[in-house]
Length: 177
Image 1 (cartoon, rainbow, N blue to C red):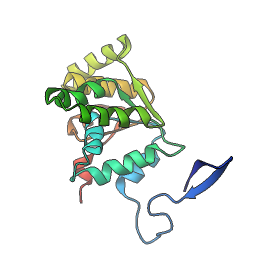
Image 2 (image 1 turned 135 degrees about the vertical axis):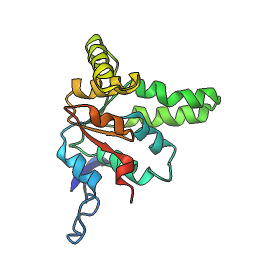
Image 3 (image 1 turned 90 degrees about the vertical axis):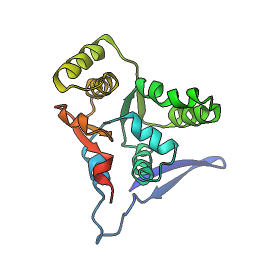
Image 4 (image 1 turned 180 degrees about the vertical axis):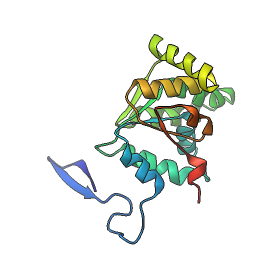
């Protein structure tokens, strides 16, 4: 169960909202719920944001659980500002300013989400990851950012991240029913 504090009139009203599936003992928690509970902080790859904002039919139920968790008081997530670069290329290419604004609205309002610009330390770690794990540059930066900022889990839809030691990786495709 998590708590939500909402303004109502002149005081605060404390609402108790059951976590998804609370009270349903016959139903096992979903793997994504178990993954998120297992980690104090998780890294989020670009695909998670794209699937959520675009309400991708294949992945939306999963990403919605992630972003629902992110609103909870114990949630902590981190992503690189490279995420923003990757997300905005296609909308800018199509001159789709509404879509650009939709991404900014999501990205700038989520609590418990830390945005990190690449530093020299992250660049060095990312270069090591490119060399050792054969990751693409954006992926190497994402992994280095997550590890540098204390994430122990990482959510992506790219199985290549599994090669990175030190991060527990969950791939969205593996969770599809």
